[in-house]
Image 1 (tube, one colour):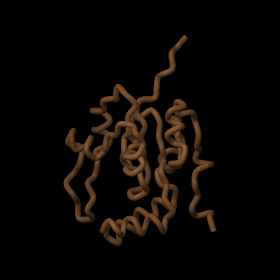
Image 2 (tube, rainbow, N blue to C red; image 1 turned 180 degrees about the vertical axis):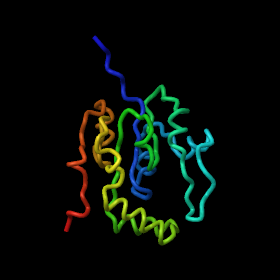
Image 3 (tube, rainbow, N blue to C red; image 1 turned 45 degrees about the horizontal axis):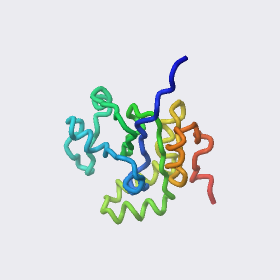
Image 4 (cartoon, rainbow, N blue to C red; image 1 turned 45 degrees about the vertical axis):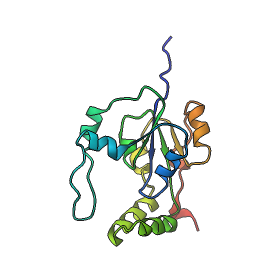
Amino acid sequence: MASIKPILSVGVTGTPGCGKTTFCDNSGIPVIDLNEYAEKFDCLSDVDEYGIREMDVDRLKLLWKPPTELTLFDGHLAHYMPVDAIIVLRCEPLELKQRLEARGYSEWKVKQNVEVEMLGGPWNDLVTDSRPIFEGEIGAIDWIKSGCPQHTTPDLAVDWLSRP
């Protein structure tokens, strides 16, 4: 009988400003910042004219070293990594806009990120993903502790455009 592989890596993803780092910092679980991880392996470009550093996700996946203990990977591209499970954090678009403006993001960058959130955030990349996924913050730690059973599907994800 095949043994079930334990969940050791959980990607915490969502648009910038949705609360990934706050969630991770308050989780009580070891955390790896995906940008720092990419920097370590020289997988980040220089800052472009929009203030963005592109991550070479394909190269980073090749250099990936799975953790030996339960670890959260904090980053808006974490769902592209070969993590065992994914937590998708979302943020109401007007709140997200305020958070990003408070960070000093350019008008262009705020608009781009708010639009991505309104259109589903990382869900557009996860429609056919078979890994266990949990959307939301409340209950996520219990979900991890219970072994990350399948929880949220794209059909059950927050749809900001359908809300009044």
